[in-house]
Length: 83
Image (cartoon, rainbow, N blue to C red; front, side, top):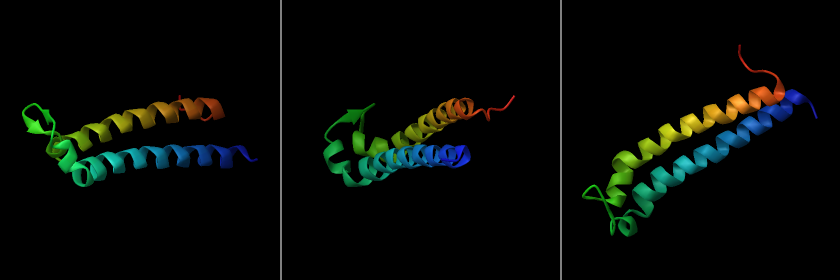
């Protein structure tokens, strides 16, 4: 298999997984499972509300750092890292 094609397959796999996590956290925890999560509190606020207002944003920022880490590792693996 062509090395460029394999690189992009892995890159798209990373993107799909990370976006799925973000979707589950933002849509699932903030909307679908909000009633069940609201039984718990974080900082005095219901957990479902917290995920809808701030939790999804925090998860998104963490996922950005995870993506950067994964891509740097992938770039080194395929010899296309930046100087």
